[in-house]
Length: 61
Image (tube, rainbow, N blue to C red; front, side, top):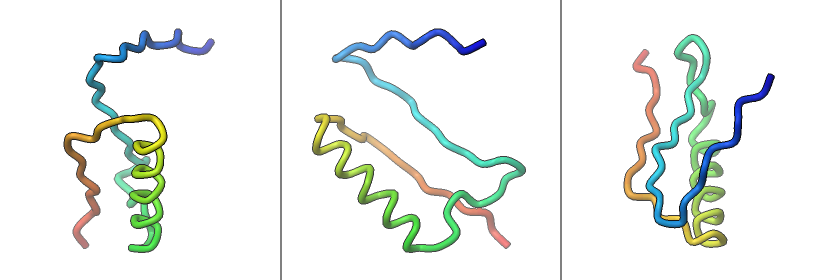
């Protein structure tokens, strides 16, 4: 059964995160990271979102 939808607020501040299974890297290349950041910037421009902080972390080999 699906989880109920979250309430949204125009004045809301949201903490969003994404991680992989088994501590695997999400991005396999610097180009993939750059594409993600470009997509995020475009989404912010279209929606008026403001990103206050972000961090793209990788495992240390």
